[in-house]
Image (cartoon, rainbow over all chains, first blue to last red; front, side, top):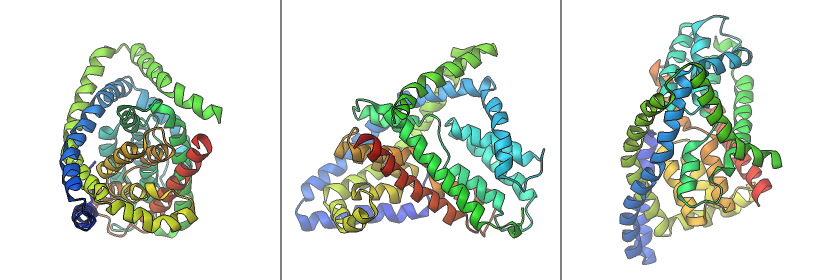
Length: 199
Length: 176
């Protein structure tokens, strides 16, 4: 949930330009009120998410402990071999990649990150150029950033706390949109990243 | 398109049943394991409060002052031409940069237009269909000190753009 450096600028620009526009439009009182009201709203949002996040992390712990994650990873493995032709069979990189992607699919953010770092380290061992990303790494990153999530719990919680009549009705649309985005990302990597980049 | 509605309705119960059944079949103390996992949820939420406060203040100042309306007004001819509602542009720009900023923006959009409005649903779909691209790039490439990321960023941004376009398209088809 942390941002990157750009966020420092975005944050300052939003605040300063907001206050300046507020001065010129004569809405200074509303702006100040909005600023203080929103602190309460931020906490309300977090509290509103608390229940579903607890429910979900609890449920996913069961999935993890019962071996469901490993089982799902086994099913996904043949598919992933197609996407990572440069990683040799039985190489530990493939195992780490598939576990990370499965954890992501189930929304296990905390478990996914260390697995992802492990996957990158294993792929680095196969890398011809130490400082340059190879196409397996690019593919892995794309699958992470555009990954399909089975149940997008956070956004359902936000919608539920905003009194939506059907907070979960965006699950299907989210699957479709992320499958489209994932396919586009895979196609882009396949087109742009050449084999001569090394495996 | 009824299938999609059914997926949305049945996805959650099916996931529940599958997970509980697999827990039972492995002889796990299902409820104890659940509690163990739930506790992690609390610390996750506590951790997002400070960034949410900071970002929601900035976003609400930006909206209440009229600055956001100015931007929406300025970009709307171009956005209408591409077919993306100008109201969701700020979210599309924030989504790859920061998870908490886009969560704050989504909440703000949902408050302004309603969770079950078309704009609210497009924003929800955009929020749910990608990850925080630059954060992912930073931690994973950073972990093994890769300097030259090649085409990865471009490919990732293509995927992000497609997610925005697909969110607008699928929600318009289903809910408009």
